[in-house]
Amino acid sequence: MNFEEGQVNKSNGKVISSESEEHRSFQFEEYIPKFKIIGVGHAGNNLTEKLLDYGIPESRLVNVYLNGVSNISSRIKGSITICKHSMRGLSWCGNPDVPKECAIESEDNLKNGISDCNTILIMAGLGHSIGTGASPELARIFKEMNPGNKVISFVTLPFGAEGQAFMNYAIEGFENIKKYSDLITVIPNNRVLKLYRRYPLDRIFQACDNIDAIAVAALYDSIKQNSDILNFIDSMKSNKKVGISMLAFGDSDDSTEDALNKALKNPLNGIDLREAIGMIALLYYRDNIEEGEIKSTLNKIRKKLNPSAFLSFNSIRDERIENKIRMVLLPVALCDGQTFDRKRLEKEITWDI
Image (cartoon, rainbow, N blue to C red; front, top):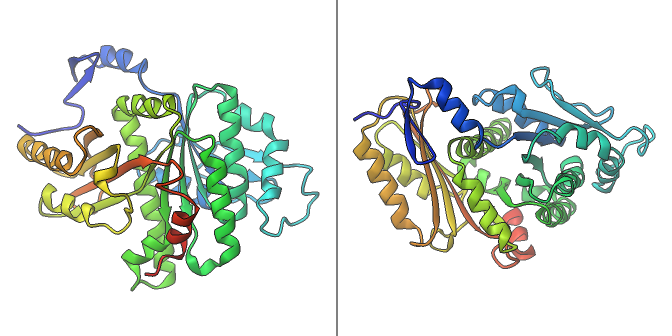
């Protein structure tokens, strides 16, 4: 049996054939979250552009930028301008407090831009000012609009070479956005260097963008494919917990097992799978894969986790991936002040590679 995306779909526990397209669309409409991906600041704005190449619809993407500091792609129509008065035409000298005040001043603009959704994924680079200062305020505003709204935050941590000030800003920004997030995915840039340390600088920045896009696209695809993830997020929220995830991925032209083994060894991930409370896993493939191979991969992932851990697994055919097979893993731990406290964040930023 070969797996083809769209051959069968499940809704309410029933299998719906691809022939009943109208019925299927009606059934799924109730379960698809009203979802937007929002890039805040330069890093977030760059990432929305990249996500278009990963097949995410432009209608799902929004950019937030400071008035007069536009980094908006012509391909992204949705944008929210913050700050018309606070800066008075002056530079903010890299201080995140100024973009924070801009976001507070422009609260009505932000509300109008996100009023039609119940789930947002905020993308920001922490350490630099706009993402660090404005993204926590966006998360706060969205939560205050409706406590049931879900905030998924995707953040990057600065390179250790960027210095103490950037590290302090990043840690403060992380603590601020954590207050209003249900799930945070973290990509420490120093871990990217571990993968691409022999690359020239311009290719390292390109690699960072590609890795960020892989993680965000996986989150988007997972939520689109499996509404159980939102239930998993709700279960953490009901226990007043915040989930934190990191990325691991592996590419292969040989087998799903090879891709999985590469993902499990990927230095981007700093979460011990034995301590993970959940795992989001996606298998992307270009050519047909036998059902037995997919089941075998699923079982191997399950054996790596605690028996009580939540597991969301989806397989998606995607002809855009470079290799034949890509395995993406997003293990989730509890961000409880122990798993990711200040010392852990400092270690991730200053990590000796």
